[in-house]
Amino acid sequence: MTAIPERLRIVIAEDAAIMRDGLTQTLTRRGHDVVAAVADADALRQAVDEHVPDVAIIDVRMPPTHTDEGLRAAQAIHRERPGVGVLVFSQYIETQSATELLAAAPAGVGYLLKDRVADVSDFIDAITRVAHGGTVLDPEVVRQLLTASRRGDTLAALTPREREVLSLIAQGRSNAAIAAALFISPKVVEKHVANIFDKLGLAPDDNDNRRVIAALRYLES
Amino acid sequence: MRAWARGHPWLADGLLAAALLVVTAPQLAAGQASAAARGAFTVLAVLLAATLVPRRRYPVAAFTVAAVIGAAQILFGVQNGSGPPVFALQPNNADLVILVLLYTLAAYRPRPVSIAGLVVCLIGSAVAIARWSPAHGTHPTGALFGAAAGLGGLTLTAWVLGDSVAYRYRRVYYASLEERAARAEAERDAQARIAAAAERARELQERRARAVDESAARLRRIERDLHDGAQVRLAALAMTLGEIKENLEQSAADHRTLGLVGAAHQNAKDTLAELRDLARGIHPPVLDRGLGPALGILAGTSAIPVALTVAITQRPSPAIEAIAYFCAAELLANVTKHSGASRVTIGVSEPASGLTLTVTDDGDGGARLVAGGGLAGLLERVQTVDGRLEIDSPPGGPTIVTIELPRHA
Image (cartoon, rainbow over all chains, first blue to last red; front, side, top):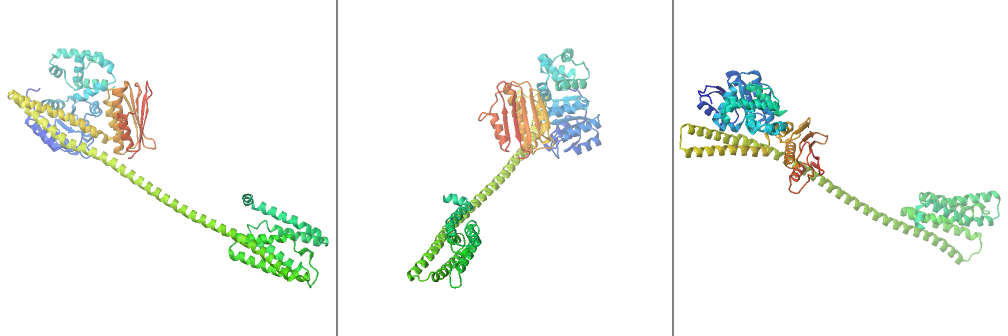
């Protein structure tokens, strides 16, 4: 997406060596600077304090309990160092953890399924957005939120295209990104967004992060 | 009659005593003596007859009293050289009690005692005959022998009868003792068998609990091994393939190679997704954080709105958590597929007995256990830990499935 890729300073926290090394090499090859690659939450906190990176990529499950150390570390880092983007990636989709993570302040926060590393450019795009204070929510989380939403009746009033746009909004995409993804003009996207917010009874908001929250709150309520 | 007498010994013996007194009365009437002597005679006769009443309970005492009175009669109630007989001490029909008491002694007391009684009676008989003969002058020797044989014969007969009863009693008593011993032994055997069976049942229960816990732990380990091993390797492989694909796209490589790499990349991603579903089916990792978060995620991904209430203060064992979770997942899937419900309620509470999971939906109802069906599978799973599953699903709904589980396997 970005024409001239900037050099991001990245900390990786992942307990599986093969993934940690793979990520480090891939990101390095793409011109980024992996300043630290660690295997547990404590080392992550130290590395963040030491390097103050642009973004930390954090596995949810890490030693010692292999439950949600990564998630809690990410929340703490996000609270204490709002300037450091946190991208949490998880083997499983846990909608609740994802929305919890984003609920407080979605600026510079991301939640992705681990599988997403397979599409390298998209993954790096997500890292970049989080590093720049954007929001990233895994499409699968959004799909589940849409499926489980109690607002089925209102959502049914959306056209298929509007549903697609809503999904991309919830994933944290900007209008420009949505236009590029759907091969339509930004003007058309704007019109769709206005229609969606109108139909759902939400106040229009140009701020990408704030409208993610609005969309999530709507889907979860 | 005998049974009645045995049932009411005091009354039977009382009646016998009364009968004896009745046959003794004419002797009182026939005698000529003062009122005081008659009174004394009456008192002694009543006393003699009365010894019958407690004879079964106190045979020795009764016999002694009767024997003392009998001895006094022999010594003072029969006319001899030293003076006129005492009227009150004249032998009478009531003296028959001595025979009855000898019989009683033989029947109810050990042989030495009854033999002593027999000897006393025989001596008494001999002395009586000896004292009685001079009083009546010239009796032929034959009459003396006849009297001796009669009295001795009666005495012996009473003793033999009593002794034979005692023999029978003893035999019955020994038989009953043997039987009681045999019964006690059989009972001990049965109790030992019951104790052994209980011990075995407890052992099996413990072994089963261990097996259930171990199986849950093994499943958890398999999931973690997949997560740390195959899934990570596959993700790394997919990432590498993705990078190769993007590099090829930018370097204008030939379409066939690009197509092959693209297919491999897609395959790796699909396999990752499949492996994730498989691993989650083995053990959802969120269960490690507890039943509440795990059910929360389940409820969050349900197509039908779920109202979830988890009210537990202490975590059950991992095996129980896993059973409760998979039951809830299966029931929720059933509701989604079959019930036509618009709302589902999942409740988890902890009664004293353990853990209760309730899944309620407002669907069409009519759910029932069918061999080989999903609910039957749940029942089987629940029964591995002695849990209970109850289905209340009338046609037209609502459906309430209640699962009760212990806190530990």
